[in-house]
Length: 178
Image (tube, rainbow, N blue to C red; front, side, top):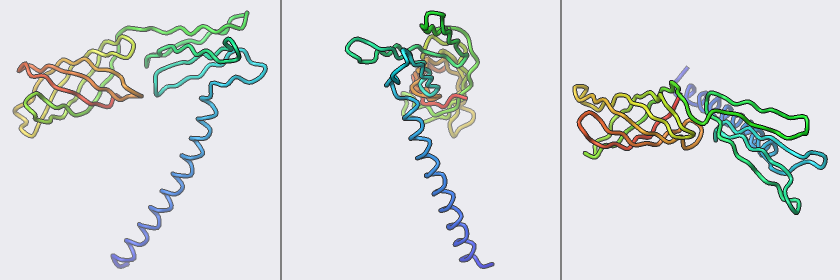
C-alpha cells in the first residue's frame, strides 16, 4: 500500500469517526437539556437535578405565580444523600468541608514569568475551595520546587488557584483534578 492510499484510508476513517462522535454528542446534548430543565411536569411538586460537572444538586419547587424556585446544594466528590420525606419534601445532605485526596496535574505561571508543570494533591476542601501542595518542574529538572496551594474548583474537575513555593515565589495554577 502506498503512502497516498494509507493517508486516504486514514482520512476516511477519521472523518467517519468524527461524524459519528458529532452525531452522538448532539443527541446527548438534546437529552441533557431535557433532563436539566427546571420546568416541572403538571403533577409534580418537586424535581431533583443532579449536576456532577458543577458539583451541585438543584431542588426545583413550585414558587409563587407558577415560577419555579431553585435551591442549589453543593456536592463534593465524596457524595451526598437525597431523602424524600413522607410529606413529599426533599432533603439533600452532604458535607460542606472535610478531607480528601485529590491528585491533579496542570501548569503554573510564576511571578518570575516562567511556566512550570504542576503535580499536586489536595488534602482539604471547603465547598469549592481546596487546600494542598505538590511539585513544580520546569525545563531544568534541578529547579524542582515544592509548593502549597489554594485552589478553586471552577467547573467539573478544573482547578484555578494560587501557590507559594519554597523560594517564596507566587504562582497562578491551572490544573485538572483526577
